[in-house]
Length: 118
Length: 113
Image (tube, rainbow over all chains, first blue to last red; front, side, top):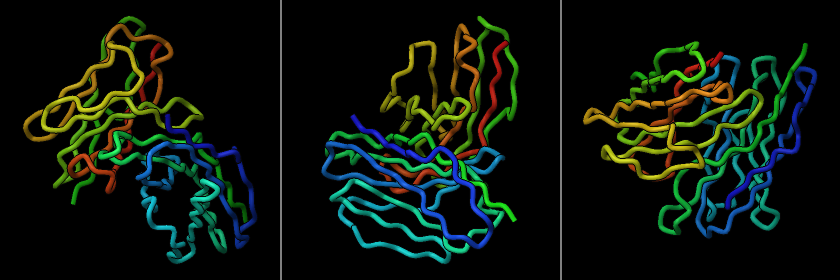
């Protein structure tokens, strides 16, 4: 079975602070994909990033960066110089590869509520 | 380019009733997945439709059923509604069954009273 754990339920920061959201996953698949989604109050899940299990290269996109470490089964997400508009619930999700029978459904963590205040 | 469209946005039903939720996928997408998100929780996978067939199903009872039409749009039906079915129902579309990218709609907020 697949499992995603986001231990941080809620994080509050002051604008311009850096913040890291933690994600730990469990899977028996050898091929899998990891995702981060943002859910603003409107409810729509906004795609942020997808990584496959063969690519451990860390990535930076503007103020966002991701740290994928297969050895510790972690896929952490950092926002640099946070802004009020970053306030939302952030979900980490895992999907197994079709060929390994893991299926392509998304297994989500319980989310981290990020509040950025002035 | 229209994204995923879901209707209605909000719905109130009485326990025991039946409900149908609708989803139009993003242009170019042919696969539709449905998720249930209870308040304060992460979305839970209900099922996925591809080529008008249910391809994968999560741990949901048979009261939850679906359909996909030739134009790739989809419906989620829930029979004999329970109070616990109150949730945000999200539709996600993708191209093929691969894990390349899912586009989510804004969801339908179902309240069962």
